[in-house]
Length: 171
Image 1 (cartoon, rainbow, N blue to C red):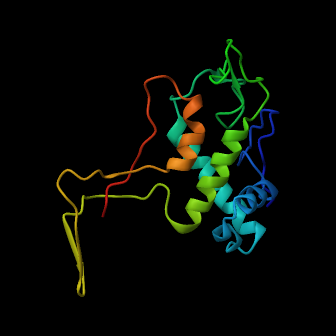
Image 2: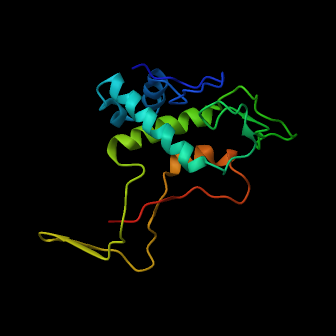
Image 3: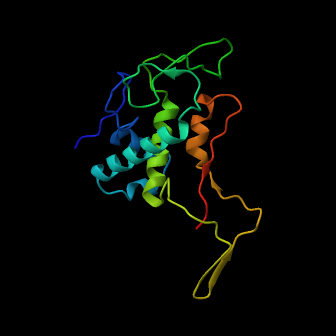
């Protein structure tokens, strides 16, 4: 099944914000050899789908502006999405996928190769022992996993005062 990439045409069946070529080029230019470990394009497509779904869940109701159409699947493109790094009030085109969104999709896809982005959790670990290895988390340690690089790329699109933190209770 071919990956359906949102390209600014408001796809009702979008599955990703970037394609396999973008993923590979993005990581290659950064010297990220871990991305090369993903052998097949089919596997990269799967990971892009997973990270797209994660982004939609995490960004829901936290973004500036609004979806351009009621029928588009993804959160981007957006209407009235301000460019915060320019001197005068300017908005992204309402049919554009910002580069940072594509980069975040690629970052999270690689992360998804190595770990679950949205694991099911049921308890906080106080102590875990496997053979001679033992782990105990401090009472005030954060149960939050933040995917810093990807979320930093998306931070400029969030509403003022909101924060991106993925709650993962250590199990």
